[in-house]
Image 1 (tube, protein in one colour):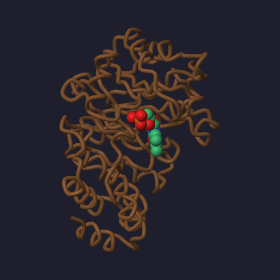
Image 2 (cartoon, helix red, strand yellow):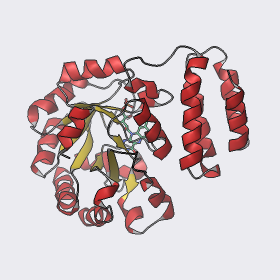
Image 3 (cartoon, helix red, strand yellow):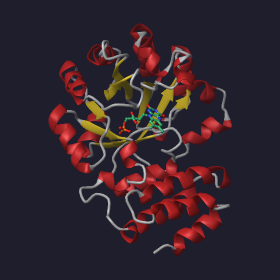
Length: 308
Ligand SMILES: Cc1cc2nc3c(=O)[nH]c(=O)nc-3n(C[C@H](O)[C@H](O)[C@H](O)COP(=O)(O)O)c2cc1C
């Protein structure tokens, strides 16, 4: 299917979030109304070398569609070799990470460092497009610093290099995750290219997603932190106000985690997710402490089952 048809069917996209957007969470967000979901970022080198910890990030099921597999790396050849390992049935698009500000990634020239080397970024996109059996999308930031808002030029470059769509996070590299996302840059990118544009940054509710579409004209809205402990963000009704009304989602999350995640390794991750469902509730800190104190999944399951 054409990438733009995926977005017109459902414009709400679950962002790649390292440490969070595993198979269980993606399935949950789909049940709650998300369209395209994206894996955590995957190292091209890890994939090429068949590293176990990397391969696990590709775990998926037929219900986990449409799926974007996100890759990061700074060498066109390695990126192309990694993409060649992804079968057409495994993903609906390959997303290239050109926005990650974490030093571990940028010091090797990958992630948002590629916004400083647009020629290399173009080579990477062309190499991946040539090799990929599916559409290729590119995710980047508004620019490097407030004085270098390069996203519109960068988007034009990505379009010329063969990208099927771009995602723009309205923060600069130097902002990291602080301050607010500038949605005006998303509008400028939309005006600069003719491929679909997915807007990203600070969408915390379904209403925010409508506002972003209205204000920027973007074709899709990507939601990251706003979905944590809150998969209801993908539906108009939003997050329920009481613990009892939130419980079915919490239980379903735990059920999917038990079914699809490598059990004990994931205990901390699951606890971290579950604790986030309690935001704004009376007695939240006591329940959160008990979640964190659970010794294993069975212990956690018993505690969650016992909550009203
Ligand atoms: C914990 C965490 C992990 C993230 N991991 C990734 C990642 O793997 N790949 C990526 O492109 N962006 C990653 N991001 C950035 C998000 O995808 C998104 O662009 C950013 O959080 C802004 O959107 P939001 O305001 O909806 O959260 C991460 C952000 C956070 C907070």
